[in-house]
Amino acid sequence: MPYFNFDLVIGEDFKNQGGMILEDTEIAIDKADSLASELCIARPELRARGYTVRVTDADSNEFYRTPVDLGGRQRAQQ
Image (cartoon, rainbow, N blue to C red; front, side):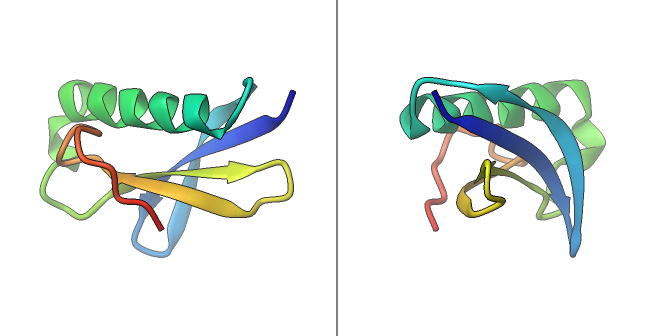
């Protein structure tokens, strides 16, 4: 099973939010949306600042981002 990393993207900086082994990319995307939603609630100061949660694979290739200010409710595929 593949390993995925999750980062909070603040401008040009990437703040590691952890990683996990998951079945596939769709589950990783769902986890990123959940993380964005949790951050939106737990850290309201992150809203409306353009911050995002990104997902990378084990080789650090980014394949998904979702905005924190939308709580992960809208997918922002790249």
